[in-house]
Length: 119
Image (cartoon, rainbow, N blue to C red):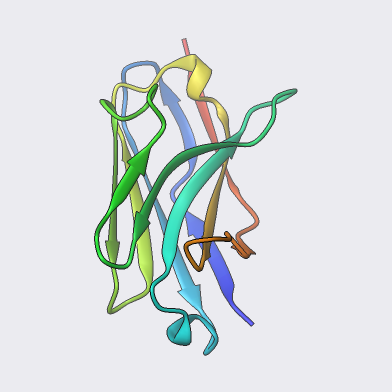
């Protein structure tokens, strides 16, 4: 089994920055290659949406509305993925989830971390 644990959420004023981190553990993760780790978010009353993903070979994918403000990075040796969020807006308020899995399926999910942006 694979466990994903997020950290780094919180409350920030509009225009501010936050950094999220996620650590994957579990022997099963190490044998998934290639793999993808990434971030999704779900705002109240809205569907979950992809924020950014990064494959184990370094390929990134961003949602259009966030690619100029958010940066994803990962450390393959440590099985961690991070999300640097700059110029945050109130509409970025959501629960942010870490996800991971093979390229065709985000099989594993964290419990989420709350990000709140005040105006």
